[in-house]
Image (cartoon, rainbow over all chains, first blue to last red; front, top):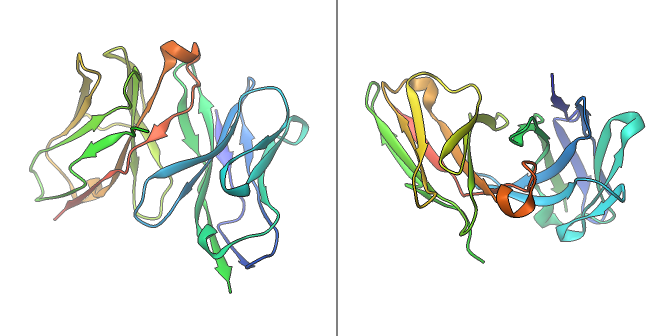
Length: 113
Length: 117
């Protein structure tokens, strides 16, 4: 069965520090992978996606992610975190013929001044 | 750019009442997905529609039903509400016909926060 695991429930980083959020997936076919960000009480905003091609994808707000098939991972990175990046981050895989999204448990990012 | 519209944004109901949530997809999007996000949880897929036909079904209770109309908007009907139905309900839309792929990017609405008392 398809699944997504985000091993880190909560991460705290200092403003200006680098960030890496981990995501591992389980999916039989070529996965379609996404990272979404959610601010408290808000909707889900797409940060970036991977469908095929270059395994390093660039997204909005300075985020990037690297697809590693051998490790079944799609980790999200940012070289320098801003206080406004504090939010909940969800990794998701598009599953089945209809593309429904299966989400990981989410990682809460806290940014220290 | 136009986004997904959901109404109402907030809804308070009593147990055993009914609720109807509405979703207006991005113009020219043909596919609608519904997700439920409980407190502190990740979004869970409920149901989806493509070209007004149900395309997939997830962990949606039998008390819930949904449909997509000719103008592509969708409604999620919830009956005999229970306390456990309190959650944030998201609608997302995508354009399968344009992209040619069922894995096209889903754009989410702001959600409807349902509180059952």
